[in-house]
Length: 107
Image (cartoon, rainbow, N blue to C red; front, side):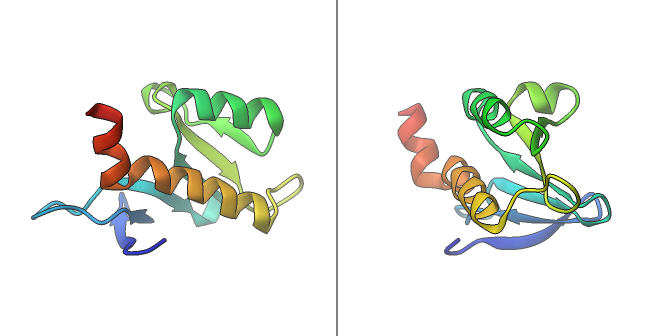
């Protein structure tokens, strides 16, 4: 992801789109290495599509964040997403975080 910034997020590695000015940008992925999962920034509609297509690979983050579309993807273990699936999911999450896409959605 061009210009992605790695930074800690609650002691976990995360990746953000480039920000503007003094902001560091929107986080689109947070790794949960011990759990073999990652959190991705999806819209609620994207989350529903992913979960319906690949139950067990995707699940909503518990609570309000999950209601907003933030989604867990299984990276390790039985039934984990393959490399191609992870790449596609990251591209979707990235697209939801880059500044140009954000302004197009609101403008």
